[in-house]
Image (cartoon, rainbow, N blue to C red; front, side):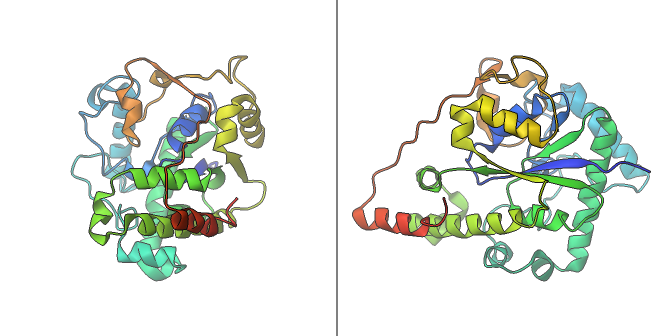
Length: 307
């Protein structure tokens, strides 16, 4: 009987620290970090720089993974390919579409996308995780740091993988400040940026918590990212204990992270612009932007129950 892949889903909002947190998970010998799996196909480009330092074309790891996937595709066992012309599925599409809005408002993915699309999506992703699990036969876990909670919601329907979920908690007021400082090209036409982003973050957080509650007890853990940055040894120990993994070495909790030992080519591009081989986990330094009195009170009211 084939063992089920154990997949760790990071439940986190955009710009919440999931990239660096997943890299810290991936440095453990029993954990393979794939980054944002929903972007592996669509964003594949042989000229992209992998965190190992090589271009994807020259990266031995991704070359072998691509060969494995292509072999399964040729046998009709898989529909997950790494190619520069692969289209993004409707479920994984970026931006705020009408269907995405319905999901945020509480409609189930089955109603929004249809049973056939959901079943095809599940089959495609489960087969992909099985291929990766076979390739990493000595690794216990695979990390998927894809953001949309509906992805987790859909894959929870499958009994063919063991799903673990780490909810990466952030101060929503600080997260909101970060969001409104960034340009949102896909939503620019809507206008009213402050109120638009406030409403979207509220519903996204509500949706995220709803899906997280569906994960069975014993397979989910909440990690406060601010605590993780300030006390990495305590929080990382909690995570390893949750996953039943022993520390690799005495320097397991070192704030210096060597990213060249992992192979990520998708996600937040700041990690690929590092001139040295290490990322330093800095302590939390929360900076709130100045807002009008009414706006400040509105933010307090919206996130009152989201502690």
